[in-house]
Length: 395
Image 1 (cartoon, rainbow, N blue to C red):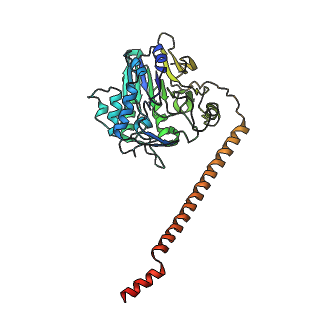
Image 2: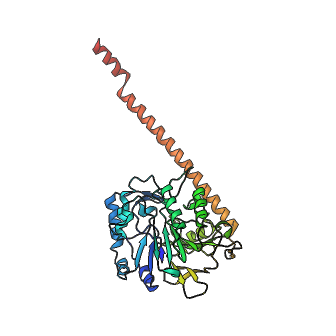
Image 3: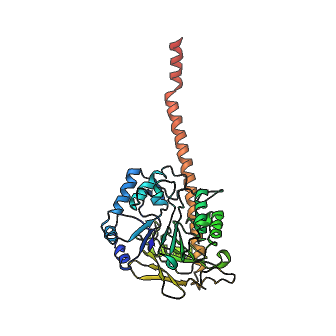
């Protein structure tokens, strides 16, 4: 069970719904607490480390979360940008090494953990034994990430580690790879995802082919969905379950919930999406039925009331690599109004152009006022009569 979550100040009734599912493992996939500070809508700034640590303590001591901790459910986690400390941050974040301990303290990571002795939060675990063993690989998509022309999501050391993990000959039945940001998504570039960095995306899919029965889990985007990449890329249908977020409904500044939901369904498109986006508060669950033959996997998203609102069922045979591999499920999506979509983009473009022109005009007006004020001050200080009097005194 997992989620990428938001905000730690508000009531968190979701934890009682999570406990009702009796999870064997809870996975934080990013933004467990917002360690940075919101200045104005869309603009975040890194917080001083003491303040960041305070935000994490507040989440950890939240009464609802404390009740969850009493269940002794195993907890693991990886960070994304906000609990990393910098919105959309990467390797350029100056406090990235110091914030590691803040996050690891939140997870109650043992003091002798390898993650306290090396750069980066990436880690792997194996749960279960024999033909019921599950390998969990958690990627750090912040500590080494470089954006731009020469972008790289993981950095060479983590790439080498990932290759070793996927080549590990220790037999397991099933492998889960997690990422703070979405992997199988070609949504608009306002939402960060692996396709922003094509070479890293290509390399990750290529490395994934080395193993059968791999699925991805992710968060970040403030909605839940299941995506699927056909076997031409991975050798078998490659599924990704996204859950986000625990505490916030669909929210975009200045628009209503209904408008936000429409934008996610119709504007933030994803060609790999095989379920309707879940825009209410949600958490994800991966349920494995070991008693079925073949073994079944349920990829579920639970809504704000604790009931299933999205589910995809697959099985081990379906995600086993073969020459004549299975395909992703056929999906018939409801047709969106192209007129409304075109109208949105026209309006959005108009707002951007108008805002740019207003900004340029404002800068021009301020500059002219500054020059006028400067001329006035210079004219007042250096009046010709004062200059003449100064010359007469010298003579």
